[in-house]
Image (cartoon, rainbow, N blue to C red; front, side, top):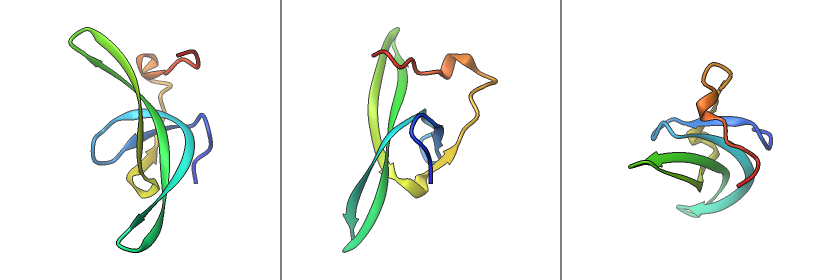
Length: 76
């Protein structure tokens, strides 16, 4: 399991973000735990922060110490 405020990376999309909560979804009649992650995106000089929710198995822990540009500020 991941902890709140931990940084994770999505295995499929490569998105990096900070864990803000948990959720659930029923997929093929199976209860599945999801992870809610704040993801920082930049597109065409516009900075956005969005909430991404995906199965918990889609995420891996991520060390951001080597890239401070990935840090998501607590103040939105």
